[in-house]
Length: 265
Ligand code: ADP
Image (cartoon, rainbow, N blue to C red):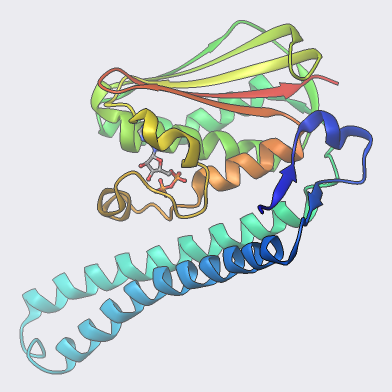
């Protein structure tokens, strides 16, 4: 007894949407449990920074009241914790918005190369500060594909940010965009965007679960780097909405490659 979810871009094309077959009550219970886990995760993720905030407020009122050095330090931490909550809430809102729209494929023409150029510009400063060479390799010049520009921008922001955060030790992050004449799964012409880093890579054990909400290889590290654990879940949903594919390849010690394939028509 299990919950079977048929979820392929091809099946979605002409059909009303995701096909979910509830085989029995146990399957339904499983779906309910998933929802419950999600709520528990969100609560936990919000409680951690809130508990820290309350703790520091108490300290500022008490022991640290007359210590300007400590006060500055604590206010800095409080600002960071509040920022984490804002990012989490923003990511939750993005996720629910994309999920709600997932059946409707966006169809405005998007200039994907221009979009990537603009997205990379916003990361150049961070890259430079971290000593990372961030480059765009475009084999194509102008391609318009049906999509939602803001959402696709978010996809590449998330992937480039991750490549620098987790794969930055390789000091090289490359975004490559190319055309595929006939993509075998999508059965048509497509545009492929690869985000490649030369960092420490990801153990294959984690790959299948990487796009799950709140799944992290190293929770402490993700938190330290300001991650919400939702970035790749958002990426996956946006790519699904565009009837595209997301592939993740990684070699521990060598680096990772996140590949987004989007149908051209
Ligand atoms: P987070 O907010 O933690 O970054 P994501 O959903 O964006 O959440 O990513 C999930 C996890 O996948 C990260 O915590 C990290 O462990 C791993 N990850 C993502 N991108 C990379 C990468 N380029 N190299 C190594 N690990 C990565």
